[in-house]
Image (cartoon, rainbow, N blue to C red; front, side, top):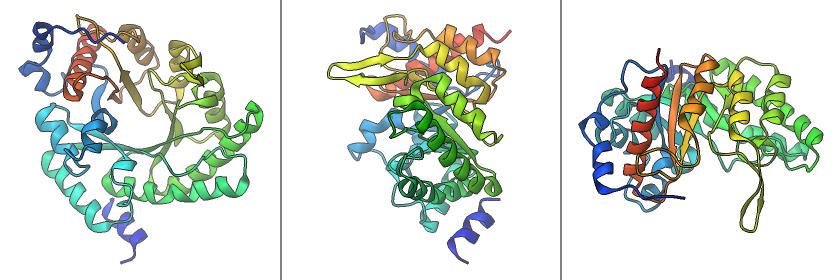
Length: 313
C-alpha cells in the first residue's frame, strides 16, 4: 500500500507568584478532567513545552502521555517541528496514533511552520509552499485531527497584493484538503496576518467552510522593532473579528500575577468574546512564560476553568 492510500485507509512581564499561591493552583483539582460546566473544551498546544522538547527531555511521541498523566489534559495540539521528518513515516504515525488511542487522548490539530509562505508574492514559491503542506494534511487525517494550523504571512509590503496571494495560497490548499476532511485554519502570526480585519477578509474571500481561523489571544504584533513590538493590533478587537471563522482558539499566556491571572490579557473579557461567537470547541493552552513550563500550563488551565465556569450560565 502506498503512503497516500495508507493515510486515507488508516485515518478512517510579572512572574511574582508566591509559593503558597502556586500550590493552591497545583492541587489535585488541577489534574482533573476539564469540568463539564465549561462552554469549551481544553487542549494543550505542544509549544507550551518547547524548552523541555528542545532540551531533549521530552519527545513528540511522549507528549500525549505527558499532557494527560502529568497535566490532566486529554486533548493535544502538535507542532510539526517536533516531528518534522516524520510526516510521511507510516510506522511512526501508527505508533503515535496507537498511543493516543490507548491513553484516550484526542488529537486536535497540527501546527505547521517552516514549510514556506502560503501568501508568498512569488507564484512558484507559493505553489511550492502549498505542496509542502500536503504531507501534513495527510498526517493530520491519519492521526484523527480536524485541522492543520497554517500561516498566512505575506511577503509583499502591499496589503492588497498580500491579500490576493493569501487567498490564492489558502484557497488551493483548502481544495486539496477537502477530500481528507481536514480544515485549513490560519493563526494571527505576524505581519498582515496579525491584523484581524485583514485576515478575516482573506478567509471571507476564500469562501470555503473548511478554511477558517485559529485566533491567538496574544499574537497581534504587526510590526517588530529593535526593542520588541513596534505596532500592535488591539487583541480584543482582533479576536472578535476572527471568531466568526474560528475552528480553534489559542489561549496565550506569558506572565501571571500573584492571584494567577494572566497579566497581558484579560481572560474574562477574551472568553466572553469567544462565548458570544457561539464557539464550543477546544481552547488550546499555549504558554510562553519564563517560569517553569508545567507550572505555567497548570496556571493557565486553572484560569481557563475558573473564568469558564463563571461564564457557563
